[in-house]
Length: 404
Image (cartoon, rainbow, N blue to C red; front, side):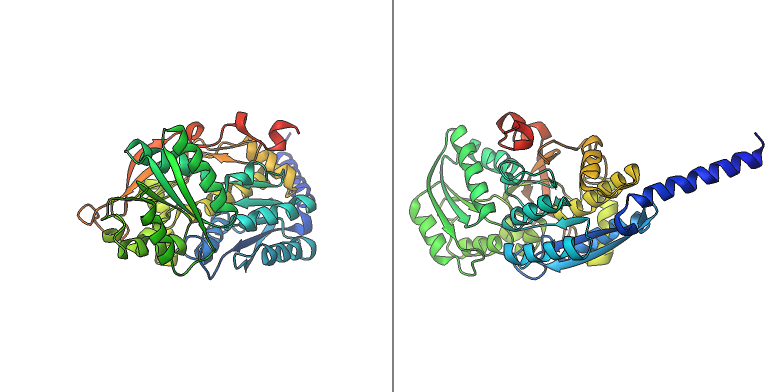
């Protein structure tokens, strides 16, 4: 075969491959909907900057995949399952959205996952914490990416009990995430020889924690644990400081604390708090390089959710590139078959229940003396290996695992 014929044959083959790929991309467009709390309690930990992380991923991919353009739409779910459900139903029924990304409040994610399963579209949950999302609420149409309440309990609660915190008072956000975290923490505390002597649930969100902190002080528990997140957590910590909770001898355990929260509190107020995180911007050269790009666009360092949105979007687009399809089940199967090695994690993997398992980290907030800059906030105490961090499949209630 002459060189000219080889080139012609190659060109025809390439054209057919692209045409075939486009034929399996619905509407010749891959459309991603970013749904998150853009203005409320969870704004800083995900919010508008999570959308920027998603836009970075699409830009890094070149704006197209498998010969088709990539489009992004976004909406504020206002932490309301009803608002979120209406938005997602409109997206998938009328606007051809292929992937719903972001997803922060656990009640929102659980509600949205039902619609995604009904319409056979895909969701990637990067912000929600409830471990039930890939346990009793698992579906074949969503993936839970960044973290959940199981490793939060295995990390922070386990460490605090081992340091002498035997009796616990848990202050819980009264919705799916808080309930899941309360349950997982209770399991770990009791397994390590401790006791939960009282739980108290607060409305979500709550602007005034005075009465709740007073009840926590009155309990006499060694540990006052906060099973909440975002502004609720920072408000509770500030109130505890005003009431002298730790000065009176009790330990304050923030079970879910984000970088944005610590930054808002400041190292003076947050120093010494232990927390579990799925990622930290200053871990290595790769995390720092990506975080520098993110900060140039946002003015802040990324939380683990921001990093997870970027990573999961790249993995999603790589799966479409590999298969030439945006079909939800085809893409999910490809994502499950592909190890995750990037700026977010090494050797991460997506299990059949939809849980992306990866190493987690027990961290401690630095003292003012240890901190060398505005965002130099954590020291990593230990790595929690993936298989130790997440719920083992042997304990799963997910029908995709049990077959029931």
